[in-house]
Image 1 (spheres, rainbow, N blue to C red):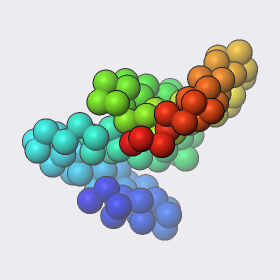
Image 2 (tube, one colour):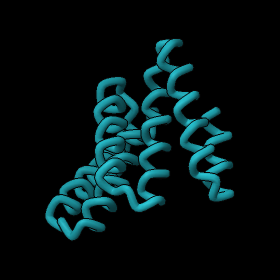
Image 3 (cartoon, rainbow, N blue to C red):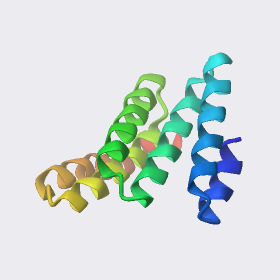
Length: 116
């Protein structure tokens, strides 16, 4: 369902994509798949940002980031930090954007993003 949502986003079928992400998240939650739940939150955040729903996108990105940190998904953390930096830049909060980007860069330089 997650990848179906991605295809639906690409074809600009946003409502259907949101439904697919929601179903995927519910299935992954019931299976205890935290990695998958974080992926669903991240994808939903991307959809929200594409629709201009930035406050909701930031909240969902923060949810994905928190879960990715907790489960040790370093590549996911890097990805979430980068997107949060972009969101903060959109808001004009450049200091906060740079904080996210700097943390992302440090993780990438340390090579910690390779052991997903």
